[in-house]
Image 1 (cartoon, rainbow, N blue to C red):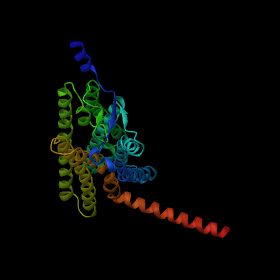
Image 2: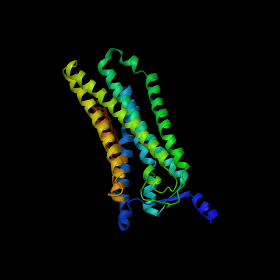
Image 3: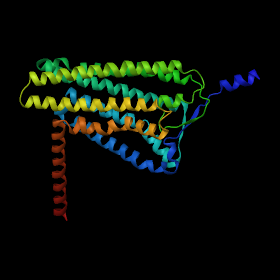
Image 4: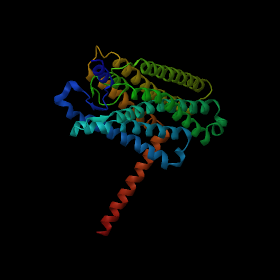
Length: 329
């Protein structure tokens, strides 16, 4: 009898089924439309602006390089889970291995922390531009930028790795059905039948040591920038500084609000349905990635003007080609 109980306790699922939005089983396939549309919008908006920043030489400054890195993170993060969910809805490819689940979890949380680090670096860039304009090129050099990005990558790996490693040692014997469209930490741990207190503590500490310091540093940086813009700068330069920093702060606020609301809703699982939890997870993971091209791209004057010039050149080229073809015929 003891041997039988021991063998049951040792059992752990290694394959899972991602079953997002379980309350609307009859209409789940229709979710392909909004998720695929959002994914196309994310890819199109972010990729066009990445390409624009890369090909236009005057946009190759630290701020625009950081914006392109942010857009790359948006594409990478959503690509780690949206195609899988769309395949699940379309052809019932809902299965995922434990290794695949952990990889997906790592990618999502890595990109979230890395994105927060990029936002901090962008705030630092604007702070230096306002307070040390004459030394801006020396302080925010290419080498400094590389170091800051590498620090963001290392920081994300250090904070995410313990959660993923601990999750790999947990026994999952309650069920193999994850009632979510993505392998989130809380969704996977809800299937655990062994002690999860350590990984819950690690998750809480990660959220405390990432969200609170990052929010405080962002508020401090942009408060200083806005104060300097009002006191030191005047005229068009003030308007440009206020507009740029205001848009950057708006983007950061949206990202952090979505993260906090999603976390709170997930912890109210006893009162909130799985469909509502899934909806807020989707908003947290997709909404900022959809809005960022408008906030950090079209909201920045230089990028907006560059896009207008490129579109005009494309129209002139297409019209000239049309006239040339008509002349040949």
